[in-house]
Image 1 (tube, rainbow, N blue to C red):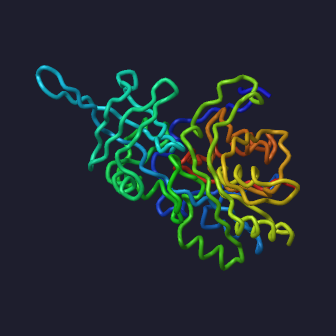
Image 2 (image 1 turned 120 degrees about the vertical axis):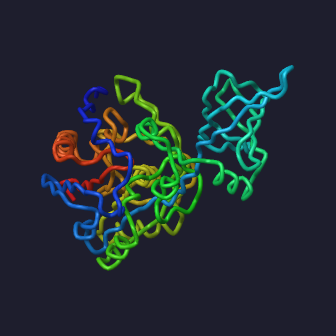
Image 3 (image 1 turned 135 degrees about the vertical axis):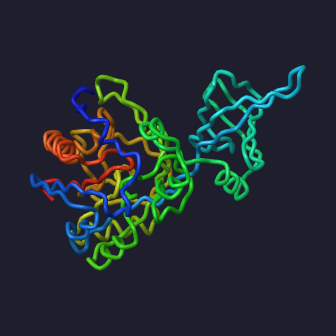
Length: 350
């Protein structure tokens, strides 16, 4: 299985830089076995059955992109050099792993000053940048919310800077547990009207937490995709969530994660057709040939060429079918990636 097998031509004009407004007006491509429907997210409840269970990721995206300066004393006085920092992941010792631009000018022990009394000391360099902040807990969260911007994906950030709209647009309506530096983007299409319609249809909801890391945007760099190593992400499936999912399976109904993040988490916590409570990191890599444990269908956005997420949907639907789906999406001008449109993928055996 070669990386080039998962390439396709995508016109740049189809890369969305803003979401649909309202959220549920986004288009929805439904691939139900060999049938294809062009709908909108408003129509999602009509494509589901009473007793289906949607699994939603309730992570909250933190405003992880910070602009600050490095103060240095010179014979002429203090000099301030601008620096941009993107937080990646909290560490067990209280530091944060991060990226910085320009990284090469940073020095061990140096201080970075941000807005609203937020500061950080450079503690580690040679094993990847680690920052120790002067604030913790609620004080840190408040300062970060005041100082930070949403960490938009590279294909959006390269076209425009994040702004105040992204603080709302790049967050789900049920976001709860802070820790992600990328949004579970399939869930961005849901609003209160869709949630009410799902409840009226008899569709059940379960929340799990997977803190999406910046590694989700890392390219696959190996030609043989089976040798690719996934980045680790922290997640939790509570006892309540596991019990709800197992009850739905036992009743013969479908488990449908919304987004590849929720899917990867529940597959990591499952075996032999059941799911267990889970708390820890997952590095699960799903590609064609994978044996599915708990997932019956998937709602997801349209993914990058040569990405692990494209490999995941090919594992669910079959590569030939996903090639058809993506050709249809491109020819029908669907909007791609994080702020783009959605698909509902239902394998033919379901």
